Image 1 (spheres, one colour):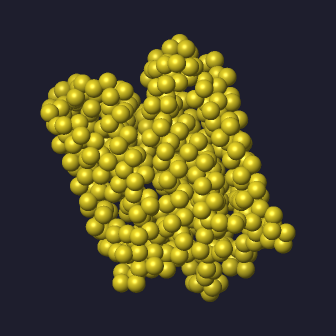
Image 2 (tube, rainbow, N blue to C red; image 1 turned 60 degrees about the vertical axis):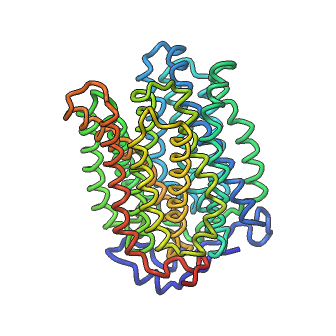
Image 3 (tube, rainbow, N blue to C red; image 1 turned 30 degrees about the horizontal axis):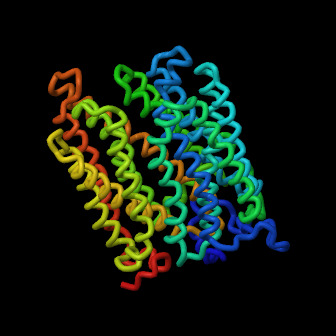
Length: 499
């Protein structure tokens, strides 16, 4: 099964300032085409195999958050210092995600996806052996190296395995198992920390990863570029410095008392980003192909999706704090309630193809985007006297509508992308996803701190949380401006919508 290939003339028309590679140098062929070994038999099987890797990563992240206090005690450090175990992972993502597309084209998608799982497993094994925080940070960096390749290369494999008319369904099959990780994470983490040793959090990844390697070897096709472009080493360094500093800056600025450090890191990241843009305009094969933004559906999905992801990144930061500081709930109680969002996301995935077929991408993105944003505004109105069932139902609905929005964005982004540029597009898109989710945390924290400064309080009040939720809601609602710019028939071949 193949995506329809656009003509080379359409690629040549997009060449500007020498940014795009020559059209005759971008053909892709499956390495095992002749023998059939490792060929894709069913896009659902491929999606579920890739979802195993996503499940492993999501499960690891959500369970780890539960165990940080226990790990800090064993390492003899303050709980706040354990943020290094999180940010070292983010740093690896920032540095290596842009290179994932080139690596897949150079060495083969199956080879690199399998290597990504092995690297993640190796990092997990080392994390389980850690006796100090610096060792843990190094092991988490290795995990992040694997994670940086798993997500974009996994999506690239799926995009090359499904026909256009199956792409919405394929994305839903990909996300559904991965959403189980955030649902199971809090209770599994609590059980492991309470009755076992926190090291089992990482050791559990080993059998899942082993199964993934076996299935990848058997079912995933090994696609690669027929003609290889040189690696953009300068761009790799500039993009790594830029994205790493931006991610660290956003994360640092969200912590109390470290705003100045966060602003300095963010400034360095912006300067490095400016140098990267200058560099990318002068080379033939930049590590992140900025000319992709000239493709209408991709550009609109990146911009509108980025605005929406800021809200999505802020919500998991603001909501647990509000429930614990404003309502007086324990961490376990708030975790039991906030899992509703993941459950709503899981419930939606089976409906996405039918809804998009009925309403089309443009109408669905505009209408659903406003509904999803309104749901997060309602979260800011939560009060201790609200029935728990009402809060749970609201979060369930928020997860449902926002998950549909991201399914639509993640699919329409590749509507006009030729098969030859899928590698660049997936790594570019994944980079912005991670960056905007981190920016969401910073935005939520900044809005919350702003409310505290105005009121002169040292602890955020429920009114401060309400203001913060309304700020991030306004950001996602502003994505409507760009959703309206999608063509009325955008993604018709993907969704089957015929107006």
